[in-house]
Length: 300
Image 1: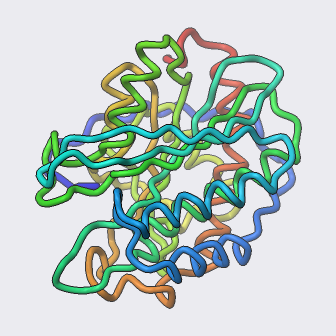
Image 2: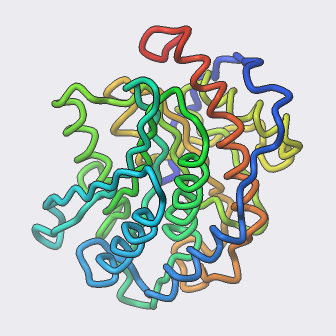
Image 3: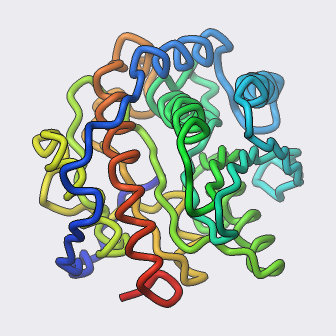
């Protein structure tokens, strides 16, 4: 992902009551942290490398243990500054009562560094792990909407972040779904959400109504201190979908000093932070479904 200095868009102050007062969802932060530990043990997980393949195999293997989850691996080749590289997105489908789709997504690759060994515990590890535990929790409860949980490959730039050197997996999947007329009704993207000192700011260009739902869910659960009111513009895997009209919200803690350094290690990631984000996402989803059921195309 890349933080940049564009002016923040005004967010729509819409707070839905659906889901208010519900019992706090159960999300096992320790289980998610175990996934982070196993991914970190693989080492660097750069797209198109054996480490990246092992990470993908781990995600797929864990998903296949969950009853009711349909697992799809979507391979593709990407043109990069280092030539044409084989990558693959992973999609877990949890069918609901209706075909309309809500997407929960993150990336599982780590950035390529030649100067040091980068294991990306938070940047790549936390999002991949959180989605695995979310899949297990969502599979165990009834769903009105169909859910796609997506692990993007190739989020990281091979060299320097640019429109062409970044977001390989999300750009590819967004195009595929648009061509098939299967774009999701809404998308929540998670990235770098395992930081022990968790401070998530509103992503400035995310859909206002969707951001409000998530922040309202955090407040209901008593996690408001981790979801700050100020905004920050960040380019990430939600951008290709937003460009196609999909309402999306990014949850990211960019105030993370070990970002893209050798210090992004397991000891920087907290089971508590993973639990906070997992609980908030689960709490927000009924309100997201409620909003979508009362709007056209998921827009105000």
